[in-house]
Image (cartoon, rainbow, N blue to C red):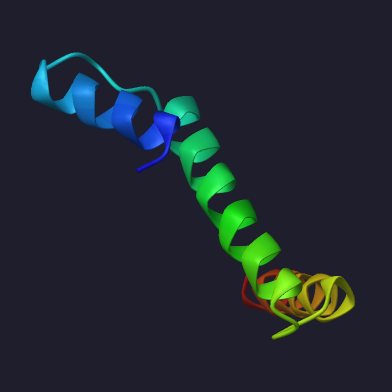
Length: 64
């Protein structure tokens, strides 16, 4: 378990307030770690991920 996840878990257990920023940053690190592992294993490329992010943003802009 990553340090950031442990940090969030400790705050949850201690009934302390968790900020949206802490959740977003933790999520960012987790996604980045997964992304890096998939690239290292040759399952996908950075270009594929960037293209997919671009496509998702375009789809979201069309909806909104």
